[in-house]
Length: 198
Image 1 (tube, rainbow, N blue to C red):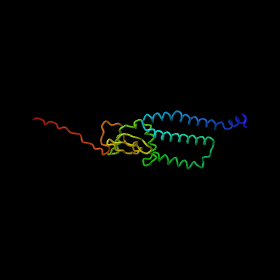
Image 2: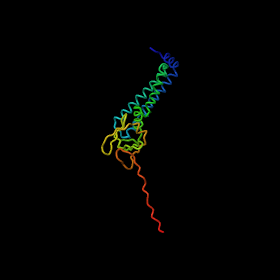
Image 3: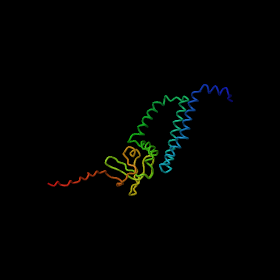
Image 4: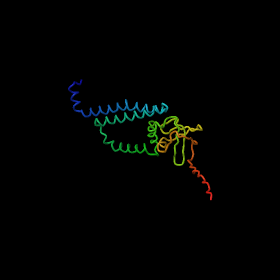
């Protein structure tokens, strides 16, 4: 059995490791007890269905637990030197994949941004402008890869999340156009001036 002297000796030997471990665990607790419930409230106010909320919160909990575990292993001196080059490459590729327009993973990143943005609530009418083209409809649901829009003609359109964030979007425009088409600008009507009397 360990006596008190051995425990105190061990704590003195690994004092900095214990302090950093407590800091990491406190940060994890703050994240799960305060930040995540606030995010959950924000998502609930967006009126999205509960499956979207559950998916998003699950992914955030897994990420925060993974990062906390990695920090704890680092604090206790687990040798990451062999994994450093590989992990740096993976982080670089993942960073590009999460934000590049052509990447499917960028849709997942956009998913979390859309969930926390109150402008993209369920039931809002949006018009997405893509160059000369446009798409508009009611937000029915936001999934991991796409947002489901319902047009005025009751057609369902799946629009990629990353395109919604990277294109100009009108939220609840005053006038509704057709569900999709080309933006055409009509020239202003010029009034004829009355002829001068001579």
